[in-house]
Amino acid sequence: MSSGYAIMILSPQVKKDHYRFDSYMSKSRWLSIWHQMDEIQRLKPGSVLEVGPGSGLLKKVAQLFGIHIETLDHDPQLSPDYVASVSALPFREASFDVVCAFQVLEHLPYEVALPAFAEMARVTRRHLVISLPDARLTWRYVIHVPGIPTFEFLIPKPQLSMPPNNFNGEHYWEINKHGYPLKRVISDLAAIIPLIDTYRVPENPYHRFLLFDRQGVLRLSNR
Image (cartoon, rainbow, N blue to C red; front, side, top):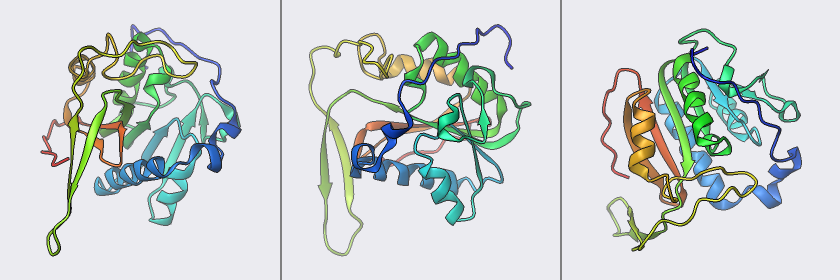
């Protein structure tokens, strides 16, 4: 475990039935999971750790395509492979090719989320893939011309100030809420492990993906 960081174990914020299909698995969330799978498979990992598996859908989908994912959560109700705190991962350094955590870190106070992120960076051999909520509202545009690939892009909506950041029972903070501008979050995370790409899911702009690589090989995003 990384030295100098306090361990914080939180009680589960939601019960297992929070992840019911009819109330949790919206179309936009399905599309976000597609991006999760897309990012993982393109890295061709031999081993993957998912922190905070939620519904467990990503692991099941990955198995269909020959990718083995092990899961970790502090809530045994979710039946993870490992029951432990993200603040003290029970693995040696560089234990997995890829470590991922999707919509997880915002469930921790920011001062706890950063050392938890450092723990994930410690146990990855190379890549770390996460997503976080981004509260900046956008307009989505889709340009389709027959015979050429469809082009999608997002334009941030004008805003005079960032929305207030108030704990809502689940999220302690979100990108682009007051006190947590994107520039600050990127700077804090990239100080731990090099950031190589970030983008928002066009079909679900609330989910921002951030990709990190120990070797710092920049990947220019077209999203």
